[in-house]
Image 1: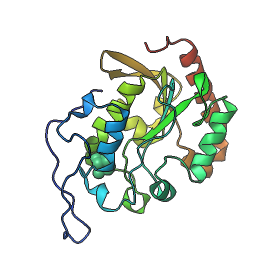
Image 2: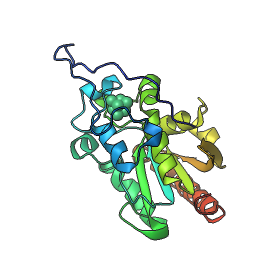
Image 3: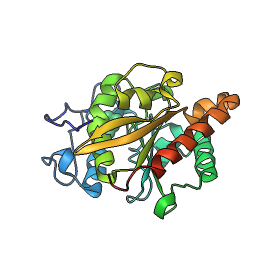
Length: 230
Ligand code: SF4
């Protein structure tokens, strides 16, 4: 997966199509996303109007965690609580994710080999908590691609169908994507990826907890057999 950012997106308008907001990226708007550092990237996301999701957001949800993390978790999109707080996975599903990570000795506030960086496919909340449209995910893709490039994690855990299909470029089911490691291309190499269910799904299907734990164990195995900053 390589970031592509060749044109300035159209301006964002509000729900009624009035009060057009100019496209703004604080800092250096002409700088390609694939050359940005963490701070520039976060500022670019905060000012982004590249897709219609900018219209309904309270704030962008960039990502959370230590920038030296060797683990990365990717979900699909901010929900209501995430939109208010500007942090991914902070609602009920987020608390479940934290429990799963803690059981594996990991955490979003942890350091060293326990540190996890968490982000979503899209950085703005879709209305009514619907899934992001492919066009919205494509517009937001350069930001996530750059986050992955900057982080260069040893393993990525993709949570849910939207993240798995977007990152792996497939329409295959979660069930068929689980159970083995995939790889995604990152500039100058590739990163191993493990697919599992989204915590929001798990809240409705607790019987699948064992499957998620098996996926965590697979991710741990991949982590332990992958060189740091490969
Ligand atoms: Fe920009 Fe991504 Fe938000 Fe769309 S979802 S406005 S591409 S930051």
